[in-house]
Length: 139
Image (cartoon, rainbow, N blue to C red; front, side, top):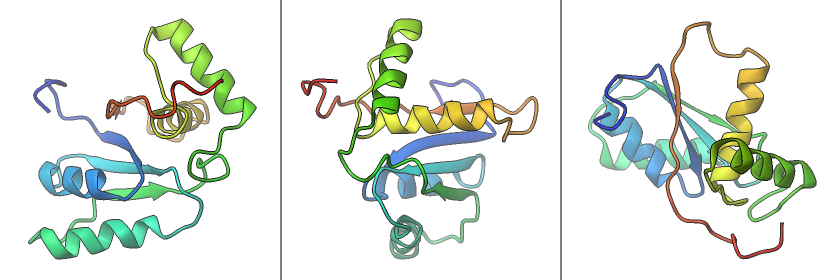
């Protein structure tokens, strides 16, 4: 929130185990809706995040959701469409994305924005969690 200098309506993050997302949900204390983009195939991420919140957060949180459909086939799976997106994103913004986490996150955000699935005027922040896992692989 310090970096953004405002409270966004939505904050999105890639999810591998759900730990980063659960920490964000608890830390934001209902201020923003947190979206997790699961990089893993399957619909278990919702339970994983909820279990972490139940274990470590004293409050009940409803300001979060998981998008399960952007995994591109599963963990470390890369599609030609994702590769093209990552390359275009770098050309347009000068920001490197990895194909395992942040590439899938921003691909999902762009897809939902193009489909106008956020209310007009909403502020949406994607969190680049750093790391460039598998960046040395041939895209």
